[in-house]
Length: 329
Image (cartoon, rainbow, N blue to C red; front, side, top):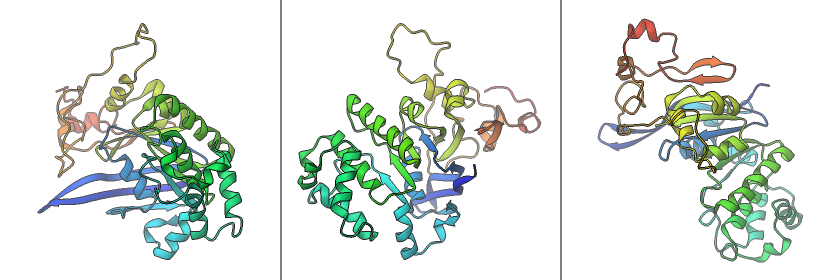
């Protein structure tokens, strides 16, 4: 199956002071297949939400291209992009601030249909059907956001994203602001809708247990760069990047007596600054396996197996030739 979305050399840089740039996203290359859920994971501040907004053109990219079903989104004008937004939607992280408190739930759901000139004269019935699909009663149509719990509001947010029948959805940490018991309900809803509607999704999260449950493939982001990309089963059973290993080691297990096969990888040192980052691997300051070449050159994203890539000099074919057998620092 070919790629439905192709991202090439995507970058977002912010000028912060004279001559300096904050490189929030810095040269990403990845694809998303039609009907696939790609998980995007990493620590807070690594650029995950920026990537999601760039892919929807909510932020203008500094460089790179985003091809959506063959169309280059970065080349579309305002009116063309408005029509394209019917095919792509977002579920925001905070359900309380992402809904207009002055609009009823019914108005919130029918507004995007009117903007896109869809279901004319049937908007109310369509909105009620959407509420039913996400587990809410039609009576919610005449109520306001402050009358609902966080879990119910996130269901409304999902219904709003589905209102224009999109092909692609960005879910930006949609359960991180919810209680654990509510998280499971919303995640099950996401999974059911994915199977029912065959949506293509980018699921952004810092919770790897959530990603393991929901996603087909996983991309690991560190300081605006891809560290590893792999099918979910491959990543969770045999990751190849030290940063991914540290993330997996931080997952809490419900059984306190369960012994790990090996102790989690402990990271030391400080996170490098994204403002004019130094040459070399972005992760090298915290990596226990760093070598001299890690301080000098960015590692390429190399293929390690079917659908599995990692950006680490431990696995790059050129490592031995370029590093000259450098020892671990």
